[in-house]
Image 1 (spheres, rainbow, N blue to C red):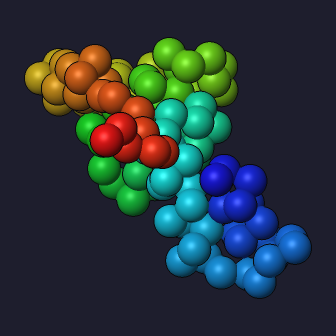
Image 2: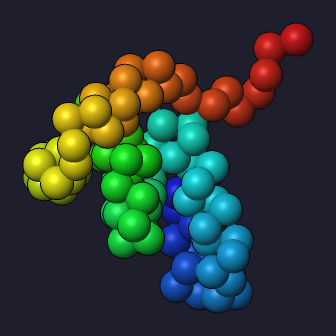
Length: 103
């Protein structure tokens, strides 16, 4: 999923399609891919949603994406304690999306 998002984003092997790239990136993040979580966190921060960004960056850090830790710490410092705690609590409750739901 993450690799498909890259292919769509850069037009490598697939047509350049930012809309599909974004969808595949989000799906990869929803399934717990650490680089996808990191990239979604960066994009959310750039869009101004620091609380949701912190949740994604915290999840990426917990999954071993070392690049996410610094950005996570910067965002924590910029948020109020209440908003930072809310984002971290959301990360605690987060569960990766199942690719094949159990029946």
